[in-house]
Length: 179
Image (cartoon, rainbow, N blue to C red; front, side, top):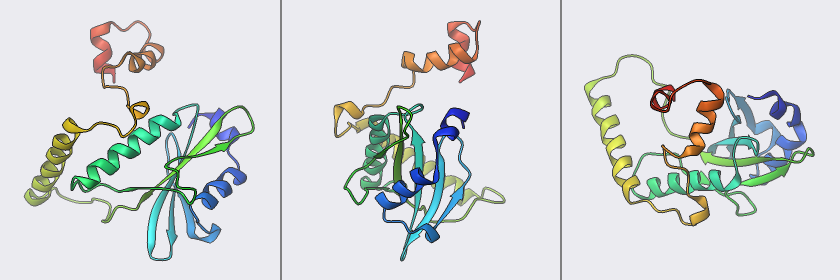
């Protein structure tokens, strides 16, 4: 995670995110995160995942688009963890960081199952392929509930900004392989 994001995060930010989703302080545990703070929590019988990202890396509409797509997949029968709304009935809670930006909190139901260990059996590979195929089939017909939530396509020039800044001197054709 970028240091400038770490520098803006505080217990107050976490407290506001917990409050938005009705999570008690003793019912939450931090997990590993890369670009976001990730927490596992429980509320009675319900278990969930709380993600807190920053506006430096993502916009509220980008996250809303992700959550809309995930819930679309869920409604189509795909085995995905449903996105949850906050107590304020928002998909994304914006929390001012006091430095001109904001943290973006959202939650998901916790996916059933266990971490995968061991051999990939024929049954597991079949189910994995079936789920990927279903997600692909559903995705081909997906339209965001709000046009502002449309996420960039895989070949959108916005992705090239990262490649160009991270890999100076690459040619256009080699950029696609650097992703």
